[in-house]
Length: 205
Image (cartoon, rainbow, N blue to C red; front, side, top):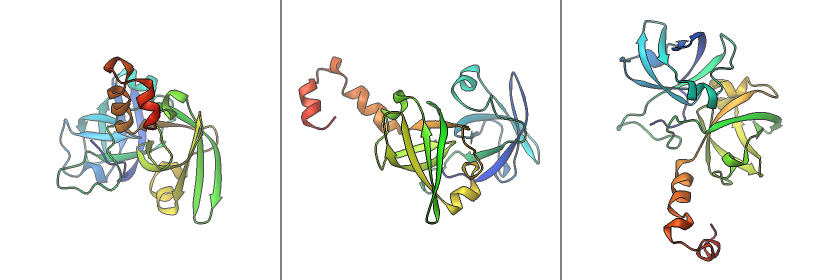
């Protein structure tokens, strides 16, 4: 489990059918084989490491759902180690299980921030709510605007500097993980569980 608070920017060294080789520094501290690291929001298991990098296995399903198979070498990668029980929950609960991707369609300066708007599938926006959470490339962000196939987030200067979201360009693809709470609520309130459409409508679902 992660929080969506990026610890450092690593970089893409090499990729082969079995996994990724990623350059890093901070996340290597106290690292052990078998530990989990979120790479652009994707939970990967460390298989080996040295003083300046680590290797992680990657499944075909991960490559299909994320941007990890499409990035050029030396691309900056958001890295976060799994949260510990005595750590601070600075963002929100992020599993590292990517639901799909989105494409940057707008970046507009607004005061000391930038408003980024992404185009994605409505099967992802159905789990989003205005002022709710979303993880974009593993970064915990608040949704500032929401439409059927688009959503916006606001990035302050620190987020632009410390994550790769400050480097993305128009048309670039990012990884999306929606808030897990929405998925559980939907499953619990499915019609086959005996909850009527009238009940859902009356209670704002």
